[in-house]
Image (cartoon, rainbow, N blue to C red; front, top):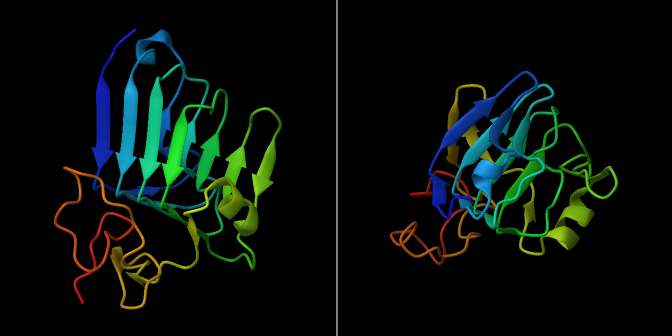
Length: 178
């Protein structure tokens, strides 16, 4: 295996169709690897998924301070296979067109089920399940508006977000400058 660390952060990703914005899938090439996803803004449409984690033998997978927005498309986050080494915290999940955030996260192991907003917050206690109040979704301006629940809702990650504004880092790729 490969004892490497891969850090993916500060990306703005729009996914449409049936794919995934970020994906980790099986193979011995990832054995022993650590993968860290921080401060990404992921907008998925149609049946696309923001992040897909398939059967994988990675050592650690950390997903923090990401903003997942689905415009009534697929799940924001899909976990399959061995999800025991996944650390996920301070992410924002929102699915437009649902009243309680149905189908936000799809957990495929050991049984298939979709979690709503309350279940996501039980799975990830630091999660924010709310409209992120993006400036202009259709115009591709995915900065945060004043009053966004993503503002000051992130966690400090040394070396990644040391220069945040306010009381804490914001969730997503953009730091609010109000």
